Image 1 (cartoon, one colour):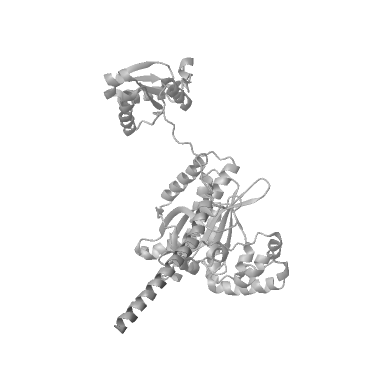
Image 2: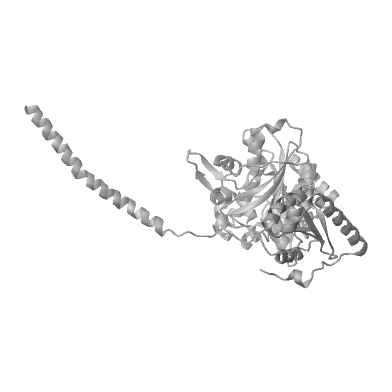
Length: 490
């Protein structure tokens, strides 16, 4: 009996504790969740792009379309195969290839951890990803040189400014497997061809050679000795670079640093014999091609993977101001440094945002897509149903046409046709839908005829051909609309 009483007392105590603790837990839960709900309600939704990001709107697309077409055409002509790379890569790929002490690694790269714990990055450039793909997919067995073309967005958490965004677009042309200087010259030739076909003028290439990693060590020692003696004249950022990556000081845009480095030791004086000969042949090829270039001994292309040839593409305005459009160079050690076989390589990247901005500044004509010469108008529900099929039939037969299915008024649709400047308008009303016919109206002469829907495609093509012959013979003719046709009933 004693044991039963003790057991009952223990159960009662446990029950009391549980009863007392339950309300406390609920109260705590309310205190924790209530502010969270309140915060969620009060959080403001910002309907705007992030700083440094932006939309490329339809009115800008004609410039981008011209750039895309020129790039694709150039890649085809020069024998480049397209490759599309992922936007996200393992972070160590860039940490290993780009190098410590660069602005990209220290300040500009978007780094984050996935839910699985992988440390990844939004690509800040494409060359490292290209080399990773080259190794991963065993491209080294392909006939040399292997030419790859890629384009897409890259991301850098840099200070946004004119023509520079945190999400911006690049086009890359890269060649693997050959070390001959003639490929360096062909790379510059291709870059010049692209910017020239984009309509850009006053283009100049700045070239230099930074030698091999071995000879660069001696050059860096000489450069550091020179800069240490005048350290106080450097900007704050370059004082930091002096310890981490002194060659990046040569690329500084601050006036006082530019003046200071004008008399700094030059990388050309520290080249090994092979690099010197390579650079000499490269310049001879450029002279043979009569490409516009100048030697810039301060040009280093601040990424660690570059070797020997480096170059930049610049446009100059009437006031002498330079605009950098892209650049590149050799990276003969990068694939080997990432774990692949020794593979010489050279390539360049174009900043498409800067190029489009330059196209606008110099008033380059954007791409104008072919305009429709035929307009399909309809009136009534049955005519709408027939129009969808007829639209498809004409489109399949290569007839570029427009429509305004959402408008009910025929005069309103004819007004749209006039604004588009079409040569032919096809009209289908309730009667035509029942009879399976269509009215073909010549918008130039003002004449019209009724044909069966079965012969519609043939009749439209015949009239377009006749109008083309007359245009060549007599010159352009104006569209003829009656005043009633142009009135809007809506």
